[in-house]
Amino acid sequence: MKHSAASVLVLIFAFAIVLPSGVVNAGCEMLEYHRVQATPHVYLFEAAEGTTGIVNGNIVAVIGKEAILLVDAGQFPSASRKVLGELRSLSQAPVRYIVNTHWHGDHLLADSVFKDAFPKAEIIAHSHTISEANRHYKDYVENSLKQFPLLMADMRKRMDASSSVDERLWMKETLDCAELAIPEIKITRYLPADRPMDSKLEINLGDLPVVIEHLGTGNTPGDLVVFVEADKLVATGDMIVFPSPYAIGSDLEPWPATLERLMHLGAEVYVPGHGPVLRDTAYIRDVEDLLKTTRTQLSVLYDQGVAKMEAAQQLDTSSFRAKYINTPMRRQAFDQFFVKAAVSAMDSTKKPSKVP
Image (cartoon, rainbow, N blue to C red):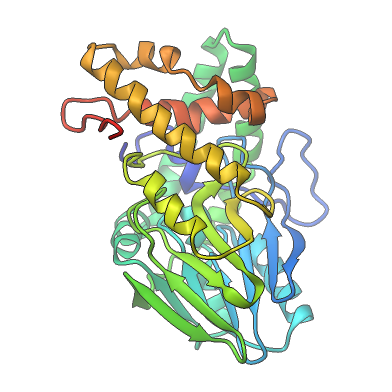
């Protein structure tokens, strides 16, 4: 599915919300980042669980003696400035690298906060990410301020018409957050990446080697991961999202093989694009199985000529749901971000491939 400005699903990846200090909104879970030391050299600035239609990506800081590398930069200036302040309390080293793991705005629209503070910082991204980000965010502020109120109004209408208690709750909490996004949009400044990187790049942060690598198509064709061998840690971007994977616009076919390559890097700690630090591969294996079984089922349903709405209802994801999808908000996030997204591939131009 394309991320059109006219689509309500722009809410998912084009916007997030972070409240200014001291502001409380009981209906919005997108408050502030929570700092976690994942390993000796790596800190996770963990965003709130992305189960509303307004999400914000994790920021990961890899801190060496001479330099800091950031994996993603978040979306809104207010939150990223707080992260910047915390970084300065952790290390006197400058931010020299900002790796954009993929093109979605909740991971890169606040690049400018760190670039302004550290003008020599280099923004690194896959060429696919650069192309898509330039296409979607070149006129981000102008387009967003025009379209965002229309999207919100459309969601209110759909909320009023919905008979699902879960869906109405999801839309209400999404709208509670959305009301607070517009002031942040006005001060957002998109910056294109400085350096394309489509294969593998080794960087030394000062006695701390780091590898940036494209392992293959995951959440997007341009996914990059960052591996810190000394800490046996890899930051995955949205190739992994906990507790519900995001598959909007994703090609499910190559994704499982990319996850296999990810798990063969030698990492013991996995930092996802959304969600907490993972210290084993159990969840990744479950996502891999979900992707494979979903592809198989969709291929059969396509061959049978099943309509998309019916396919979403027939798709059996009960095994994954039983382990992870255990609240109303998670149910809606899973249905919106994974099930409906996967089913959207069922059209005449892109038939889901069968698993060999």
